Image (cartoon, rainbow, N blue to C red):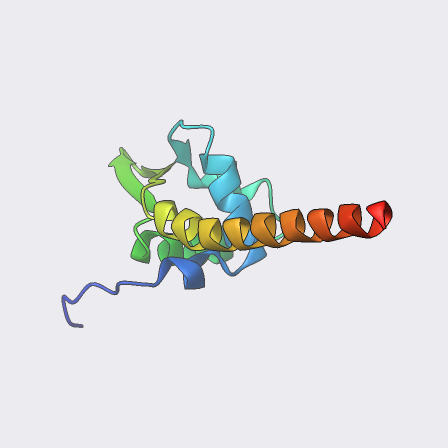
Length: 110
C-alpha cells in the first residue's frame, strides 16, 4: 500500500446527499463520534465511515482518535470554493431578474 494521500474535489464530495447531510450534522461545531452520526442514517457504520473518508479527502472533515473512538468535526474552509462559485450565479440571477422587473414595469406604463 502506498503512502499517498487522495485529494478529492470539494464539489465531488458534496455531490452525494448523504455527505451533505453529514456536513449539516457536523456543522453544529462539536466533535461527533461515528456511532452518533450513524444513528441518523439507514446504513451501517462502514457505509457512513466511507462517506466520512470522502469528506476527509476533500478536507471537509477532520478526525481524531480519543481512546478507541474516532471523533469527526467539520472543516468549513473548503466550502468557500463552493460559495465563491455560487456567488457568480447569484449575481447573474439578481441582475437578470432586476432587468425582467424593469421590462415588466415599462410594459405596464405603455
